Amino acid sequence: MNTGLLYLGAAVIGVWGIAHIAAVRPVVAGFGALSSDNRRILVMEWTAEGLAMVFVGLLVGLVTLVVGAEAGASVLVYRLSAGMLLAMALVSAFTGARTSVLPMRLCPFVKSAVAVLFVVATLL
Image (cartoon, rainbow, N blue to C red; front, side):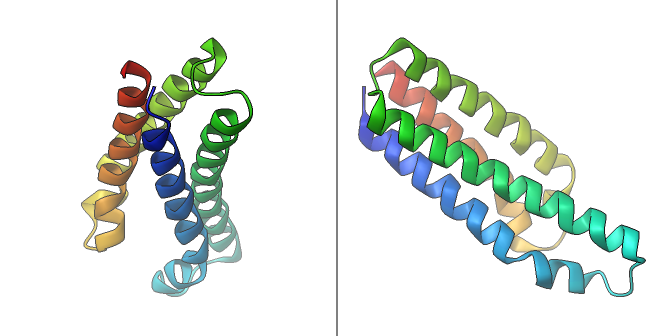
């Protein structure tokens, strides 16, 4: 098993998630005048997606470090994490990626690329 691919993917998706969270304020400001409810919903959803990506990165990284990449449970974690990232990529492809905002257009590719790293690592 290629632990380098696992750590690389975990780092990439973790950093992407942190960047996602860090961008909440400018993203919300970009929508202009919003009702308090709409602003809260936007902040909640944007933050939740960032936290999900950070969680996947931490989960993969810590499972690899603590349990080891070869354990059956580890392989399950890697493949389920890849599935989650692919599902998130699909949602992004039909929503945010259809905007003119470059990072949002890149999001499905980043998530898919990390998912591929996780799957490939389980096959080596």
